[in-house]
Image 1 (spheres, rainbow, N blue to C red):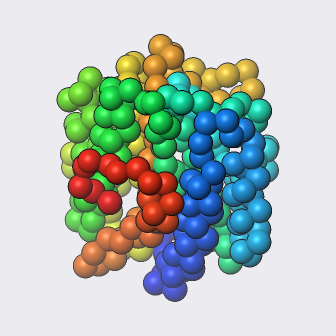
Image 2 (image 1 turned 45 degrees about the vertical axis):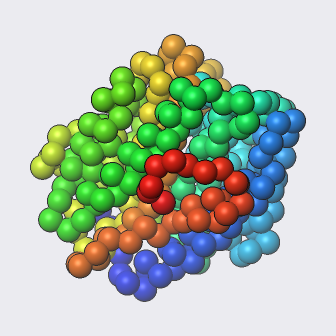
Length: 264
Ligand code: MG
Ligand code: MG
């Protein structure tokens, strides 16, 4: 069941997303070779709680931390830990905030120094696909239009679109209906209507679309161990427009990396 949000509820979600965007930026400032991923988690956890929020992922179905940190071949849901970042890595940071009863959720994948041109392109194109998906998230379209926009863009480069994990509605629950797959057909799926708030989050693999889950019950990695990228925004649908309610602006101010593509 899709829960449609009022304008007032969307306003609270935006407040939640502001804390989230700034928490992401604090993490971004610390990303460099030699840093342990658990130290990044601590930064986000403290920032969120110091600003009146709660890290949505912490204790969510037993997930232990504020961040999901997924390095290189890990697609999503990696645990922060003792791993030390090194040159040539890519690191996806996914985070959620609960504030005044409403969640926000966004993710960003960072290239460290020394990343190959090939991997950089994967990141850039995954990020681009997110904005192509967002452009389709408007009244009159269906979720399949969003899915198709993401899939058709990235598959032309021979990338794999993960099937097992999808975007989702967000509100009082972290994961609500509808599901927002990164693959699908134009004109199919639920109608996009005023009051819907959902996360679009392409998870795109350099090689095969197939993934496996570690014995820890969480960590998802590519079957061929090639790298995977993940970018996520939430949108709110209004009658006459769609707004991106999460922000990567603070991240992109803090992490001085120039994307060549034009999208935000
Ligand atoms: Mg999400
Ligand atoms: Mg997320």
